[in-house]
Image 1 (cartoon, rainbow, N blue to C red):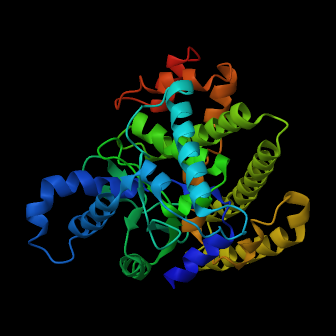
Image 2 (image 1 turned 135 degrees about the vertical axis):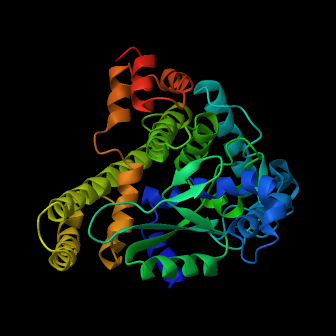
Length: 382
């Protein structure tokens, strides 16, 4: 059940994979403008259906500042902070993060995150990813404007469920996840959603900086590069924000570092598992034997994860791992968002740990040629 997929991911809520860009729905905007007339001729047209839902959310958006006018006499869940005070803190935090992203990091100044949408769930959309069962070969969808991407987004849960069923009939591993944000790459004013009011400052900063980077730098047809780079900029940008606003000795900064350390430990564990599976997939074993051995390896990894949990992690956010129905589609997501060679972190360190300079260099990348080589050259490291 899709709802169960989403719940299991929510149980491991600090897994960064659940908070990343829903770029797969961006093509809906551009395509809807160009193909609307054609879409109405076909029932169930993906572009028309998802575009209509997305535009519906945008039409419901109100100015962020309107939250300050909301009368909320009732206290928040902990009985300590009024709804009005929570709204004020949220508005001021968003405004400050946006200023930091533009003025301190050099990201594109836009009207993104100046509007707000009330929504009755704690995720924006469901995204489907798929992979071969006996290899880490991604399934891709092809869209106008942005080209091929290894995921497809749906606002209606039932649509994601149907897409999963279609892919499973093709004998693919499929994963469905909830995502909480998307970028329209500057075509529209990307809004904030009501569930974001509960986010910690570092999580909100990571999300906004990540998405603002996509709106600043996006290379068509380079999904891996775009996602890895935005993941790095969002993570490091949020750390710099927390350092500048709260200080290195603050409880907020230490909590953020602890969460980041746990995330790195989780990614390291996933890499250990994928390396073991890659060795299996590249062997000369028959397909059925590979699938049997794959199941054994995954089950053994789950047992090892539980046994080693306390020595690897300081928090409880990843304890749900052994309950996940792990498959190649899930593991491939981490290969997409986290570069195994730590390219961006290495380039960042070698170039003097200057994030604004790294972002400025990224703006010079063109769609022709290897974007990694272009970035290194722009930084004088190639």
